[in-house]
Amino acid sequence: MFDLTGTVSVVIGGSGVLGGAMSEALAAAGSKVAIVGRDLQKAESVQARIEREGGEGVCFTADATREGELKRLLAQVLAWGGRVDTLVNASGTNSATPFFELGTEEWERIMAVNLHSVVLASQIFGRHMVQQGEGGAIINISSVSSGPPLSNVFTYSVSKAGINSVTQFLAREWAAHGVRVNAIIPGFFPAEQNRSILTPARVEAIMRHTPMGRFGSPEELKGTVVYLASKQASSFVTGSLIRVDGGFGAMTI
Image (cartoon, rainbow, N blue to C red; front, side):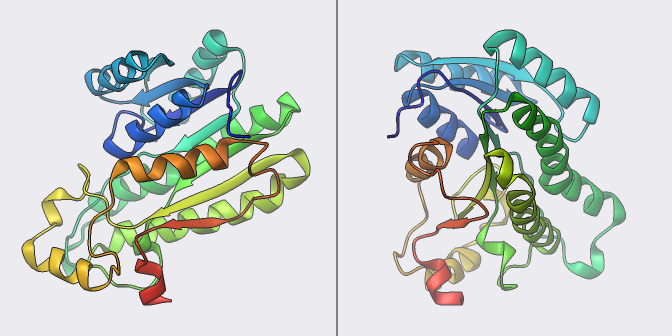
């Protein structure tokens, strides 16, 4: 049921901490994985880990905020793998700039990376999946910050709320074509984009709202991404926002 042999997965942001873990999980399940990032060295490190475990992965560089680069990426992936079955939108950036100090440049940069890139990639790769005629899976990475305003990361939270909306809209739009669109809502996972804002006071506040009393490990996203990528396991699942948050949502809903 969770065997992805014969499929091709594209993980945009696959060179990051969370994206890298998800790339490894998809490869371990049998999918050929295109690891996409701006930092080729980090992407190659993920590829090496995949290959050590007997999986197959290849690195591509692309700026996911640019339509032309994503179209080039799709062509490159098709030349390599012949098809695309799964797209994971895992790129992201963050900032804790107070609202009254927030500038236009920072707002546009975070929205471009976190939301605009997802819309562009979904449009380009989703069209291919529809035309391919065999369905597919798009998996977006949201955040617990997309819900109640429990964090000081204003622009990040707005962008992730947008991810939830995009996910559910496209799920409805493409259901008839067998393209399933879902999102994972991770809790707090230390990664490059948030380490600078995890002050001792912030960590204490997060733990008060997390029943499990700890941060998540990137390994704990692996099962969910494989489940959502598998047509057999999640064939009737679309438009879902699946929480992997140590109970954080139970404290805030």
